[in-house]
Image (cartoon, rainbow, N blue to C red; front, side):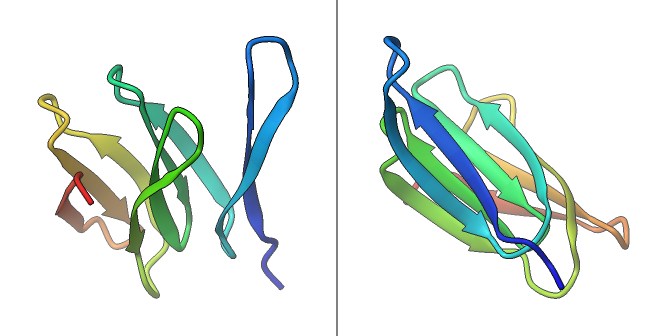
Amino acid sequence: MREISFFKFWLKDGSPIKRVKIGIGEYRNNRWDGKGYDMLSASDKVLVVDSTANFVKMIDVGAYDALVAQWSIDRFLILISDQRGVIRVFKAGG
């Protein structure tokens, strides 16, 4: 059985803002884009949230587990590589 992946956000003083459910798959990574957006990825979903954990976009990766999710150089695209070696490209905006 897969565990649910969560990501927690805190304020600078250490008080929690919220906990975001990423997906039902294994947690993979978190990538900040330098402009106030985080990309959170589990093996089954990739989420884009703003700096206070408000939802911007969700990408359902599907049956093929995502290994790596990465911003493109210009931050307009999200690149997701799966276990088959296929790289899929998605627009980063909502």
